[in-house]
Amino acid sequence: MDDILSVLRDGQPIDSVVVEDACRERTETESEKLKAGVTSPMQQQDGHQNSEQLYQKEVAKLITDIRQAHCHKNNILDGLETEKSIKDQSELEDIGMSENDFEDLKRRVRMQEASRRYRKRKKATTRSQREEMERLKRQLRQLQYYAEQSGDPEHWQKVANTEKKMQAEQKHIAKIRNLVRAIREAQRDEKKLIRSIGSLIQVYK
Image 1 (cartoon, rainbow, N blue to C red):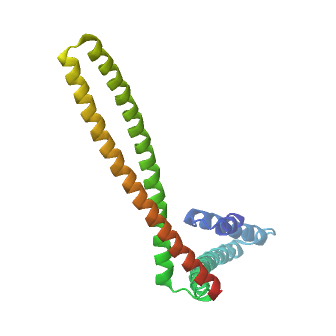
Image 2 (spheres, helix red, strand yellow):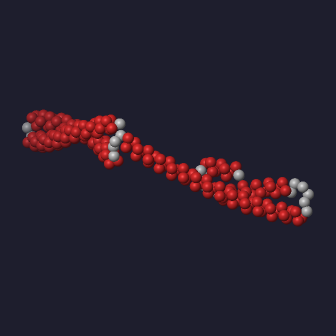
C-alpha cells in the first residue's frame, strides 16, 4: 500500500503487479488475524472465502482511488494551463494592447535582432575587404618597383592588372558602405517606432 501511495505522489503510472501485491499483502494480514485462534475446517473455509471477498473489494477500491487520483491530477493541470492563458490575456488588456499589436511588437523586435546580426556579419566582411585592399596595395607597390627596375613590359602588365583588381575592390567596398549606411538609417527609424510604442504602453498602464 505504501508503494502505491509513493507512486501516486510521484505522479508515475501504476503497475498492476504493484496493486495486486499490495492487496494480497493486506488480505494475507487479515487472514492471519482470523486464523490466530484454533478454527474448524468449516471456519477455515469461511475465513478463506471472506479473505477472497476482502481481496476483491480492496482491488476494486484501489482501482477506483487510482482513477480518481489521475482524474484529479489532470484536472489540476488543465486548470493551471487555463489560468496561465487567462493571466496572459489579462496582462495584455491591462496595458491596453491587443494581441495583434503585441505580436507585431514581437515581430519588430525579432527584425531588430536579425538586423543586428546582419550588421555584425557585414562588419566582418568589410574588415576582410579592407585587409584584401591593403594586400593589393602592397602587391602593387612591389610590382611597380620591379617594373621600374627591370623595364620589362610583363611587369607593367601585372601592375595594370593589379590596379584593375584594386578598382573592383574599391567599388565593392563602396557598395557595402552604402548598404551599411542604409541599414543604420532603417535601424534608427525602427528604434524610433519601438520607442513610440513603448511610450503608448506606459500611457495605458
